[in-house]
Length: 68
Image 1 (cartoon, rainbow, N blue to C red):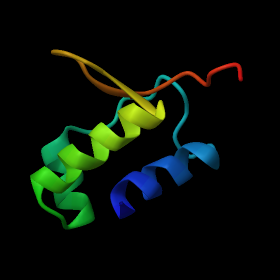
Image 2 (tube, rainbow, N blue to C red):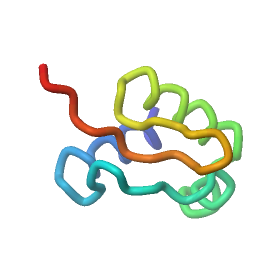
Image 3 (cartoon, one colour):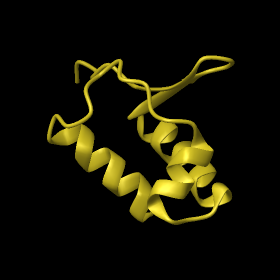
């Protein structure tokens, strides 16, 4: 998925650092020019990959790198 791959690449290059808060999903949808549901699917994929963590009521953050 393009949105997930783009965010993941930004993490890999250091443009997004661990602990950084991502904008709300609706704002991401606007900035990427995609639907809200597309961003929801991308966030789900990124959570499954371990790239982001979501904290209810606080937002979605770039995950700390795992030690493996």
